[in-house]
Length: 103
Image (cartoon, rainbow, N blue to C red):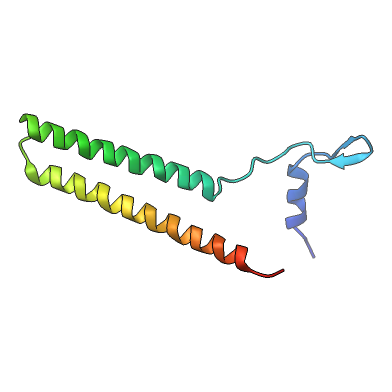
C-alpha cells in the first residue's frame, strides 16, 4: 500500500522553530478575495465610463463618424455600472441581514 499524497508535505519545506513555536519555512500569500475583485471591477467600470465619455466628445467634435459605436460604448458602460450597483446592493443587503441576526 502506497500513500503518495503525504509526500507532498515535504515540498513545503522543513519547519522552523521560532521562540519555541514551530512555524513553516514558507508562507503562502492569501488568494485574492472579494474586496480585490470588487476594487478591480470598480476600476473597469470607471474606465468604461471614461471611454464612453471620450467617445461622446469625439462624436460632438466630429472626430468620430459612427453614432452606432458611440451608442454601443455608452450602453456597455451603463450596463456594467448597473451590474456593479446591483452587486453592491446585494452585498449591503447580506451585510444588514447578518447584522440583524441575534447571537
